[in-house]
Structure formats: C-alpha cells, structure tokens
Image (cartoon, rainbow, N blue to C red; front, top):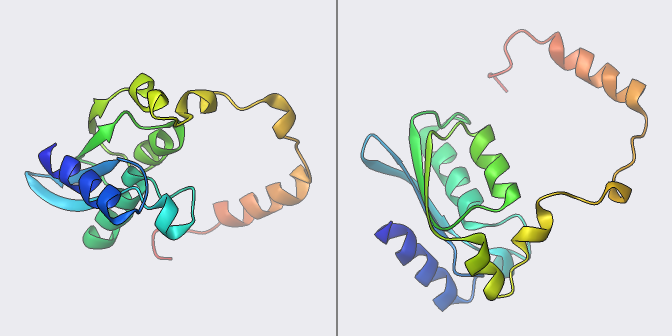
Length: 143
C-alpha cells in the first residue's frame, strides 16, 4: 500500500489528477502501477486503477491478470470495479472509502446506478450479426 500512496502523491504533486494511486502485484512482485491522470490526459477513464491495469497488462503481455492483487488508495469506483473484474484480479486492498472521496468532491456514489433515461437500445439485430461473426472466430486471444 505504501507504493500506491507514493503513486498518489506523485500524481497530485505533478498536477495529473486526484489522490488516487495503485499498484498491482503478482507473486510478491510489482507488475503494474499507476496514478490518476484524468487532468493530465484530459481523459475521464485515466483513474489510478485503470492506469495500473494497463501497465500490468503491458508488462505481462496479457489481458488476464489472474493471480494478481491490487492495492489502491481509495475504494474503486464502478468503472474501476468493472475493469478489475474484467482483468480477473484476485484481491483488492483499498485505503479510503467512497464516503471519504465524496468529502473531496468526487462523485463516485452517483455512478452506482445510471439513470434509465440515459440508455436506449438501437439496431440490436445488426449488432447481433457482429456478435455472431465474433463467436465464429476460433482463437480469440491471437489479436
């Protein structure tokens, strides 16, 4: 966790974004790290966990982080939780809670359920054709 805290401090001192740092470990070795870079990259998806997942995947040359543990300075938001699950990360350790981040003005809590009027289904049949094409590919790990 100390390394995640150091990542967070590096990011805030550089003006990259919020106080969110993250480190990913496999078998006792750091395989990825990152901090919030939303402001620097002008990209709302550049949370510390996402940056660390990208770094770990690059370093391990895989999209599957099974067996990895993630250390982060704050409880992951819904987007990061999804990324953690998609990456198959085995365990998450976090410092501050959603309530703590809310006190700093971050809006994590409001994202725990998107308003129904934001989503509208469109062109399902055409999209199902793309899904069918994908399902017919034998080796989905080679591209």
